[in-house]
Length: 391
Image 1 (cartoon, rainbow, N blue to C red):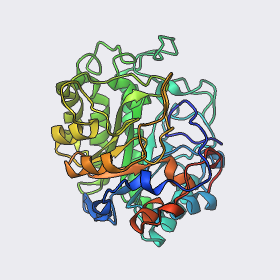
Image 2: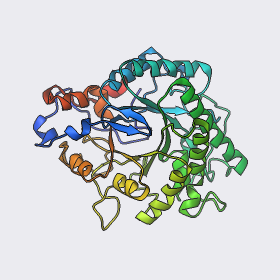
Image 3: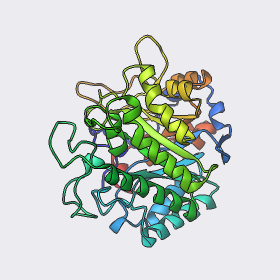
């Protein structure tokens, strides 16, 4: 099965199964600050590195097995926090594969308990990413082939009609499914939860005017478009209590729509994010394809930097760290550099608190540790083949 960061994407060029260039990676930069601890709503993280969520599809019938537990544990020993691959909440229309893990049913939850135990055994911290595909669901696909596709306005991004606009009662059922999953996450022993509101999936479909054409309280203004996400955050907060970390992941870009934007200005972004803060989110995972790029005209500040500045919440930055060929658009060359110098400059400016690694960890689970120990010649570069297996 191929790997994705929960998105449909352009295939990155295959990386050689060889070490990274130490000169290109550090480029004279001191990365020591990334190895300081961080408290995420009272959960103590050993360093500032996060394993990003990446869909793997190695959970037959939606149940993660011992191989999945080992996969996460091998990386948990080297990062401060693991965010699991996207896991389906128990809403009938949430998923589109019986190999993507579920986050409901005692068989799947028992599998997740084994994952949590394996991660905690090596001193790691882990949160599940709770996921609803929305309009990206394939009609008739497992695990619930009878379920209709659920989306804000019954439309895909290209305008294709895929169903009816859901009622408020039907939206309430989605909110409840996230709350149940979050309660189960706490019961199983996870250290928090992440809500997937990025990349064109359901919560993000409500954010995006192209897929949200509703004329009621869930559409129109940025605050209205954020209403479902805020209701989900509030319900999750009620389910897990006041101190359990609730991370919300968002993005401008979507799978197949790299130029998409949910906000054209900082004011619009603030209007989208403020309801999430008020509802009880404790951190923002800001997904970009290129972590260093400015978010809006007239300012060098990145999207993670704007999110932190506007909300006061801790932010997680991500986007092409260690893998310059990820998420290439049409007529787009590889990222400008492998150097961590821009990353450290942004960290020193206070634009983010944590940094997420994706594909880099597939080929090199010990990527942060080898960086810390300056064993740079031992860091194995990303190999596309590692996206097809659990390493």
